[in-house]
Length: 257
Length: 172
Image (cartoon, rainbow over all chains, first blue to last red; front, side, top):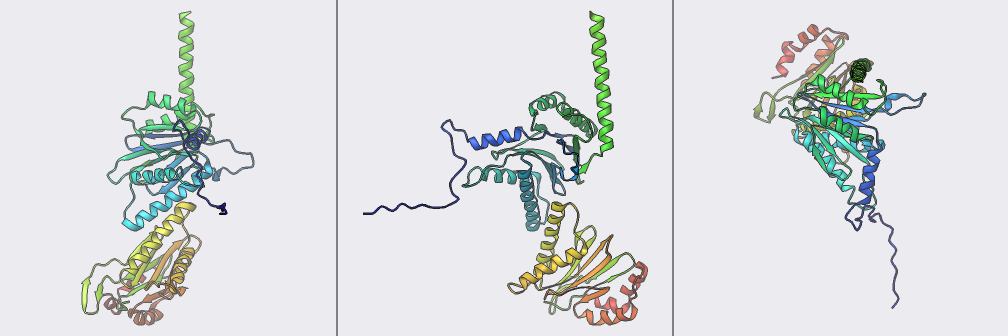
């Protein structure tokens, strides 16, 4: 009997397989890609949700308009990502389509929960299919649900999702997370939240309005961006307050010696 | 598709007026008189549809959602010209498969084109016009408008045309 060796060209060879210790290495590496991404912060306040993103340095001849990491998914839902920006574009596209698909079928706005779960579902699918690699992104999905509740969802490359009061992703996220844990209280006003977002970002980013991008969403409104002038004003306020505090500390140190 | 329904539109000075009758009927039965046949596409565009019940709503909503998706992806809304041609393309693609029995008028305003009105019928013929109408009412409207319409009418004048007794009777 002649044995036939059957060589099959197919796209079903899995890339994400289990390691002996139970890890999915590709997913772990995806998390590493996220850790290298630009810093992204989300803060939920009493009546708004704020997204603050670090704008990476661009070339002198480059036009910054195409450099956005905050995506509007629908009138009432937006998203910002940390990790591979090209993957972000693809995911935003899928999410936008899903929003309109939902609206077409149900003639009502999709809830943030629905979209966040949908994005998480897609991410998980890409960890369990042949021929594809996981998305190298963690996303912060923000928006207001029908009942007026603001929501801040985090979805990770593994496909898990969670709800947060405030969170940070990307480079130096740990530092920012510690800052947020210390300063974000249960009740914060929109203005306090904006200031906090800028402060948190300044912990790890060079100061300057061309280095940060701030957007927020209020109930019933679509995504709004903070103007560069406003950001500059906030930055100078924060820096002068910090300087004053530092001078005080130095004075106290001098008096005690 | 019921030709008894009447929709018409006209382009005025900086605006486009769309008028639709509000009846939903099938031969001798009058189901309702508060049917809304004008679908907003976005802040500066609207579409009035008549035709096969079901097809009309489906088609109008399909266009609405597809254009909303376009706007979110690109960042700026499509022009009325682009919208009209997109709508026609969908109609034309389906014509030789499973046609949409929908007649519609697309009204839009944009800062380059100004106000505009597009006539699209169920065979996917598209035309940009100053005034247009669908249904049996068109027989009367087109000749009445030929007589009374002038380009650049103001809104009060346009309303007067719409409340002309002959035209009003078409809208019951």
